[in-house]
Image 1 (cartoon, rainbow, N blue to C red):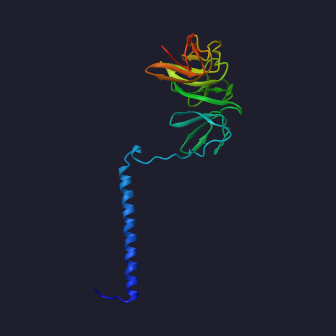
Image 2 (cartoon, rainbow, N blue to C red):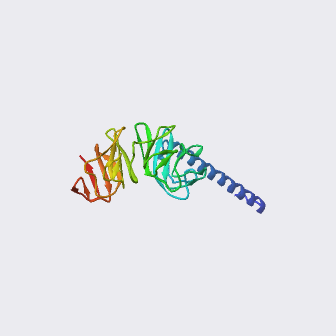
Length: 232
């Protein structure tokens, strides 16, 4: 072996460290390239939570739906990074926007659904976009309109079912007739669903083509149930 002077040995050691560092960088870069190539779908890649558009303030989000390529966000909030928005806003890639005049302070959107190609909201309100709408209203993409005479108190849940829209909540009348906590809209008028419930309906879903309601009730249509029942 050749005995190198001290300065030469230090130079060779420094070059060796530099080569090792460069090799490590290439190795990391290669791993990242392979990871990117393997992520052919969202399901293949690591997933993380992140905020959406800066969020909302002065309240909560209670309902979400996609309509005409935008995210509809309903709740009890009054403010977004885009400015004041009461109870309802629409979000797209450019930010937050109002929806046809919206709601007043103190009102809330508790439920949302897509029915008959329209965006329908239910909640605690009487005016939307300057029009009278008793706790339920529909947006056709350009204008708001009420669904008949609406409900006499808060709507907490909405779901399309067999070509009709079902609403559940805290109300006792729908369209001016008795409907205990649950009712259906056929596009023209409101109707009760059986004898209804003895307390609030908080949630609605369609399961195996049957309407299912959940809430704080113990009786549905005169039958004893424990907070959840299906319509046969």
